[in-house]
Length: 142
Length: 281
Ligand code: SF4
Ligand code: SF4
Ligand code: SF4
Image: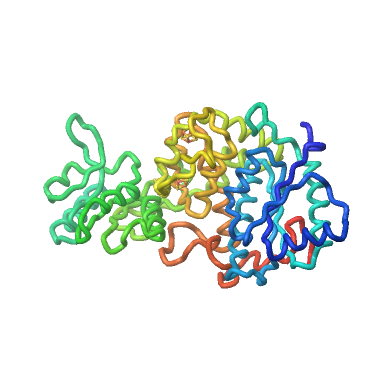
């Protein structure tokens, strides 16, 4: 079975309070990052419904990252806790079907942790490169 | 057991505890169909087989009737649990609904791979011990072993879906209007075979914390996809991490919808990682 090497596309959902500022910081510090990821900003990781992650995978993303503030540091009544729990549960389903829960990265950080952000993306990219291809799950021609 | 159920149902109607009893009736030409019994004498035609889940039907009936109208439902274990889940979601008003529960026998439990083949409020029959679905060889094949092989197995199964929506319609808990499976944003309509990840994984995940393992989806599926098996690992994870099982306690809300700092958890508490690849803070 072929691996995803060379085919990695990462979709990053990140909250604008922590993850996004971390991403910004990584850019400002000129940290070298893989070109395989695109960022969608959300107000809170709690907005990212598992369906959105599923839809991203269905649309050809090799991996999806959901980044939020540290647990306990959420701006919105700890909404990142239940979001984390839901997405953890989604990992279970992805593991069951063999798609692989590792295609979903959950991460928490604070606004100044741009190095952590960069490291996370680099590691995630590397991890996805080794994943088996999802071709049998995707409609032809995608 | 049937006589016991009939007796209790008659009492309910005679004492006016409810205005109708929902159950199965053997009608003309021996056709069996769901029916709301309203007079005690009608109940002679009551039957219990085949397995039929009434939770969704009870919801629809109660919505049609005036507020003061009360319904009693003859339920199996899974049906009672489905009703509990609908009550939690404000789909059924507990004050207007009464259950008359009876236990399934061992054969039924084995056929359903049911771990709780009896309702909590048991009115008729003796409860038998359930079977552990995860110990079943057919289930194991789909949940364990090499991920790559499993991926092919599930893909081969789900590819056969003809998108009849039978699994959604038969599930006693699938009641959302509008349904995401009918929304082009999430699932392209009119495309067959269904695009597997969107259709199947979204459907399965929507039931992650509500599935009562009744097996209705699987029984409804015309191409025989093992749909209930898809839910079992999530049910197991909820049990392990939060000691939560859908359909048991109407007062306990789903742990994945609420703040886990306040949720008593025997398993994984606030995670000890900053990212799920395992980095420690
Ligand atoms: S799932 Fe369980 S409770 Fe429901 S019919 Fe089967 S054995 Fe009975
Ligand atoms: S077993 Fe299927 S039909 Fe029954 S509650 Fe679970 S998802 Fe719904
Ligand atoms: S019942 Fe089976 S064939 Fe019909 S939509 Fe569900 S999975 Fe597909």
